[in-house]
Length: 117
Image: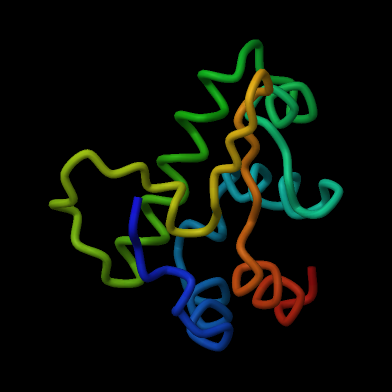
């Protein structure tokens, strides 16, 4: 899927992460856990295990809602059709015969470091 989220500046993400209401919710733990993973990359199944969810569907749903809230606060239109909100912060890495990996984009990682993570 084409998107311009790679072009969002680190400073814009820093401002969002410092000011977004959702960053004060319990769901921020998903992003923190993902950030702490090796190379900021994990499968949904790995995240669910690290966070104690029963299955990856639950973590994917909660992560998606969290990221959607961030994207909406940033000003992304909520009328996106067939859009996976996770693309706002990360890329999906598809390899043959492997689970899809979620990798936080470099601008996301740099912004999280700037806010002290």
